[in-house]
Image (cartoon, rainbow, N blue to C red; front, side, top):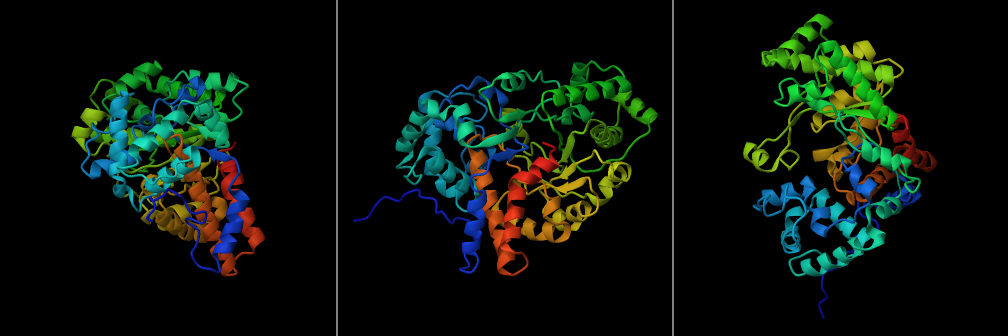
Length: 466
């Protein structure tokens, strides 16, 4: 008799298939599988944890906030409107319809890490055993919804269950950080949850909201503007922040003299700055952010070269972060030379370089990290956080810069329940890579185990100064 297909993630998934390597990878993975999660960069809303309000429904948890999911369904012909993007909590019938769309179009996720993460979440967090399909959508929805209503699946209970020891959110410099203050003051919250200073819109005079953002800082002059940014960084550090996060059109950092910067600032506030001037100011401010990091010790992470809001109509209808930010090419070596000439050997600077342009890992990021004590290679991120790209990165970067120059894993997610799935995938892939080095007699197994523990725990603590 035929049986219904089941959802049963294999215990050896993602480990090397070679019989001589897999047992080594198993042993290495088992040694780190249950270590606490260190998440130095992500986009979870801290109010979810501060309020500990139950998640409303499976769609609000798995689909609506996760542009990894919605972009693939949109590419398959399903409008974002049908997926509830940007619509807030949905009525139960609408939420169930969106869930049915996901399950009926499960084939669109085949071969992607998105499917891997979702399957891991469904199986490990909610005990789902039915393979997603149109036929199983309603039963799985009911199973997940029932658990979300229980105390065991409220946000803080899951935070503890996921063994998250450190979680950084991403926050606007003008944020009051009230949610973070509440979390820090609550003795029931054992995880360390901190903000991250994300100043992009305050550094780009070409943006239509720049003048309003600067006004919010209360800065009427360039020197007041710098002082206000420094003050807000101190405010973030006082609330536990360990890093700043920057994403611009390129990685170029070119300092201006103070008089030129002040002149452009004044022109930009009155809408008179040219495109050349606003670009020069933004590149200058990246140098200023590095200077401030040398002063206050906040780690600086840089992930440039994303074409934001690629589809204007989608942006107009649904807003930013809705799945149509697309990678572009980027150059680091010449771009960062002025910044590194000034600050590259400063003992307070930790500069973590991320990219979605895989060609730059071997050619530029690894050599930079292999010389400058301030520079670390950020792990594959966003469009590169898939098994094949991660395996390429492991070989390309570590053979040039070594394991000690890596950032440790970054999950970069808005989908709270995907955090353990993403970290588990990274641990499996790192175990597999190190097992291959052991099998090739390039490392002893005890060395590989130490390196894997470092990548999982010690390294992110060091790089992000935890």
